[in-house]
Length: 501
Image (cartoon, rainbow, N blue to C red; front, top):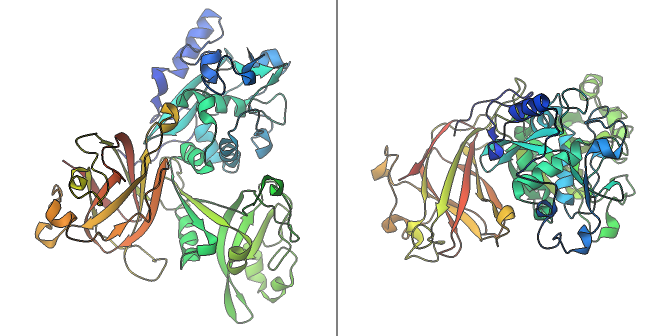
C-alpha cells in the first residue's frame, strides 16, 4: 500500500467510498430533487440500533424516535466556535472509550479536519447529508450518514454536545456506528482503538511502573516524528474518576504531552516534560510547575524558550516526577497521510492484508511444530541504522502491529494473536522470496517476538534490530483459528517489506 502524504482539507482523494456512497454526488442529487437524504444502508430504524442489548424489544430502546437536528432546535450548527472537548458528552451508550478518542481529536485541528471534513453546515447546501473519514483496517474510508439521530423525549439518546445546538460529535458517532454495523457494536472498548481509527496510527502503551530504559528519549524521538503522546493516572474505582490530587492532578483523565526538553539546573541537566490538561485549566503545583522555585535557577534565555509560565492548562514536570505521578503512557505513531508537516519527520510504513485459513495457513504458534510453518510469512530488509538512536546503540527501530479485522462488526470472539521474527540465514542473503521451513523455524530461536499472545483487536511491539534480512510470522496462538488480519510495519529508515508467496 502506498505511503505517500495526502492533502488534509475537504474530501481526501485517497479515501475509499464506504458502501460506494459518494457524498458529493448524493448531495447534488438531493439538491436537484429538493429532498432530504435518507441513508438506505444505515436507516433510522431499530436495525441500526442493534439486535441484543439495543434490540427492538429492549427496554433501552423503548420510545426512541429518529429526528433530524432541524427538528430538535431552531438553529442547529455543525460546529460552534471550534471543536472542543465539551462537544463530546457520553449518552446512554457504553462507548466512553470512543468518547475519549473523539475528545482527543479536538486537540489537533489538522487531524480533526481529516476526520471531520470542513465546509459542512445546516445552512449552505443543506440536504440532511454529512460525511466523515475513518481509518478502517489499512485504508481511509469516506462515510456518508443522514442526520436522523436517535432521540427520546426530544433529546439525543447517545453522544451529544454541551452546546445543545451543536451536532458534529453526534453525527461522527453515527458514522462510526455505521462502519461497525450498529450503535450496539460500540459498547465496550479501548480508547486506543478509537484513536487509531481516527488517525491510522500504531499505538504503544507503557506501564510507567515498569518504564523501559531510555523512555525519555523514546518520547523525544516520537514527538520529532509527529507522534501523539498522552498519559493518565489510573483509578481503583469509578469513585476516583476526575478526583483531584493534592498537587492538582486529575485521576482517570487523559493528558497530552506536548514537549520533551532538557534544562541546566544547579550544574546539571534535568529532563522535563511539558504536559497539557485538555480542560485548559487546573495545573500541576509541584516541582517545575509554573511558579515553582526551581525556575529561579534556570537561565533567563532557557526560561523564555520554554514559555514556562502560561496560564493555559499546560505545565512542566520533571521526567522522574512524571514516572512517580502518572500510571501509563500512550504513544500514537502516525503515518504520513495523517500527519503532513514540514516541522516533523515521518515514519516509513508498510501495510499488508492477510488471512489465517483453517486447515491451510492457520498454523498456530511455535508450540505446534507440525503446523507452525504453514503460517503466512513476510520479508523485512533493514539496511540503515537510526539517526540519533534513543539508547545510544546503533540499530534499526521497528514497530510491528498485528490487528484482527472486523471483530467488532461481526461480534466474534477475539483470537489470541502474536508474532515472531526470525533472522534469514546468511546462505539466503540477497533473496527476498525465501520461505523459511522447519529446518530454521523449529531449530533456531527467533531474534524477536511479541511478549505474550493476547486476545485483543491489536497487539503491537517495538524492537531494535541490527541491519539485515528478517522473516516475520504472524499467527494465532492455537492452530485452526481462522480470520483475516492487517499487518503494519513502521521503521525510522526506509525498509523493504513484502509478502512471501
